[in-house]
Length: 90
Image (cartoon, rainbow, N blue to C red; front, top):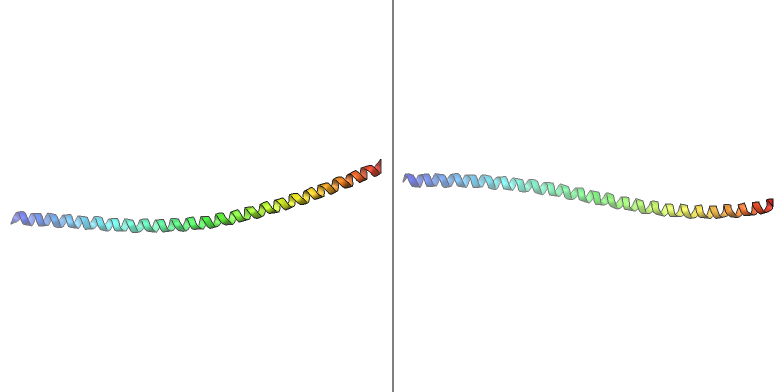
């Protein structure tokens, strides 16, 4: 009878330990899921920021092309005026 009681106590202790481990694993799982959700939120925010930066870059490149185009036009006009002025001085 003592052997059965000891066996039952051992099984109860084993069950309690298993339940404690299960509770610990569940808590770790919840914590990991929260961290994953936060990381996903951060990724989404960074993707949004990256998209905005790409849009800003595109706009800046378009502005640069337009400015370069205007600069080339002004440079050509200056060269034309310089040639006319140079020819007048001759």
